[in-house]
Length: 312
Image 1 (cartoon, rainbow, N blue to C red):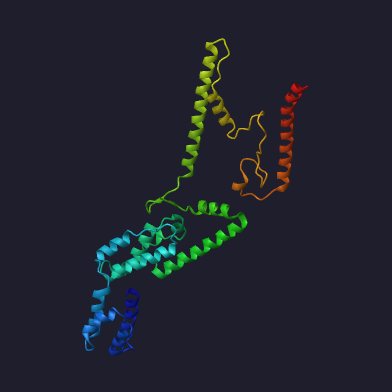
Image 2 (cartoon, rainbow, N blue to C red):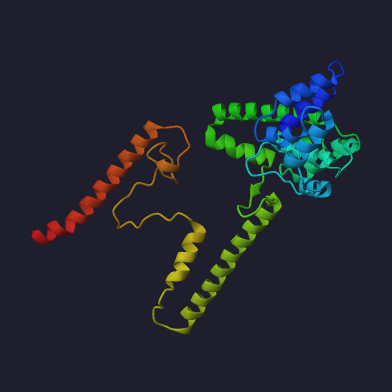
């Protein structure tokens, strides 16, 4: 009905068409059940009576103030593009204007303010300087064109980054540059990212806690060493804590069977091939495989030597 009524408003504003022609076109555009609504009026009723009858049957019945309040509570949904969010705001504001909930001359001002208030990506608002345009807001069409141009610019840049850096790195870098907010799955509220200073402080606090725990364990070890002449029982938790603080990725014991320590895709240490985003490096993989075979041969010979001595 809203789309049909928009076309009717354009027809009513056409001064080149007579009232009888307007009425005929409107009646010809109706289908059931709309025809059943206006049928009791007959053919001699004025044009406005037909429109009032249809408006009463299919028009918006919500109060204008309620529609405007709904407009003010409309926020960007997860995954919704800026231009789509602006379109949704404009439809909601138009309904409020038609029902008398807000003055039509203030539509651009309300539209821009609510967009800045309900849109979560602050970097886009800053780049387009939308906050500074509230005193003289652009029209809906001008603002929509600005947002679509910015969307196209970011999309083109992301495609270039994917070709140069790869998909995973490009998306990660794009998020860090444009400060894309994360979302709470149970609400529409964006969770702001922690500042870099906060993350740095948290990391330093964690390191200090490890150092304090190491000092406490070391003090216990020294006091136990001085209290007894016998060989003290070494605290295994202290060894694990010191080892983890010195080397977060401890190497396997010398007596255990040598295991691969490198990625089978790029040959580098610290990760496996499933999580590897690096370029393949067959030469380095072959080199590490050769070193792994040598270690395993040495281990096998050490294991076989005592057994050969017993057999002898």
